[in-house]
Image (cartoon, rainbow, N blue to C red):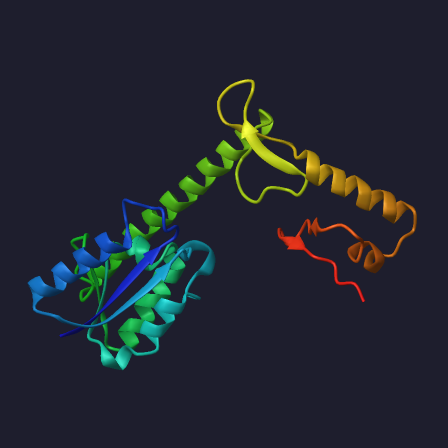
Length: 218
């Protein structure tokens, strides 16, 4: 049988389901079953929950179903994060005569009972994803209530520093950037045009670009 291996990782820093671990498990299953691996597709730093089926690697596999007999993945939650998406993938592959095989779950998706069990596992995978999202959201809300930095892009005019009142980090004013912001605001209030301000004598880091902008004088 011809096998296509599918690998997905929401964040490249995840260690428990690293691409290397997923690939090794899938290749081991193929070797044990005597399947020939003819394609390996990856979606790294791609959320299966928010992107649904709109993932480059997955779409490349689904567009070549005539070339495969089975699609191998590490776990059902690597293939789909919602029962709706999993059911859609299962429908597409069944119509194409292609089987699905999990490298770490004892599922036989060639039978109606096996497909039903797969849907049950997909339900719990979706529940786990929702629980993780809620836990992260609650953690961020807790940090915000304590005035601590929750991560992400640093707003222009601020910088991250150790929390003086305890663990974690906080945002503090960046003196140089704050000076630039005040100067820009003063010139805006003085009714200077934005083009004139942008072409001013100083080299200013654009608040949105995050890089130094060197004025061009003509």
